[in-house]
Length: 167
Picture 1: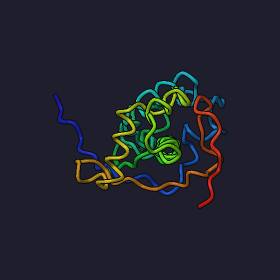
Picture 2: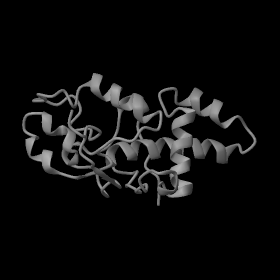
Picture 3: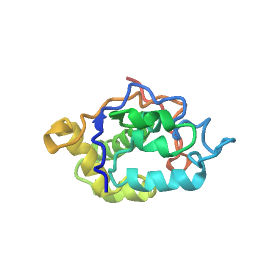
């Protein structure tokens, strides 16, 4: 049995790549020979993300080399976190924070879950807060980038539309 290749994970790039599954133009697009942009795959990916799981940017991930057209990635030893996925997670954290700010003594998590039933789980929110408070690396993770949350080309329909926020 061969040893698994050690790959360095780096922070997300400033913007989601052109082949990001969270780019609205890519979702349910054809051709999609690997099923990256199907509703079923997006649901599967969001299922992990909402729990606080981190997602790699697939055009930088050497594990993708098993897919036709991605063979050149096999030699990479660096991959990035997916900026589109991180954008969605951070947007959900902002929604949670807005609820908390509006009613600091209220049942924030309960209200968030009722208002956004497909949003982040408690564990997912805690994971993001830990990354932001501790810079990611303190807990053995990757430093969290700050992508543009107002990128209107990024989204996932089950989360609803993002209300563009002023900086």
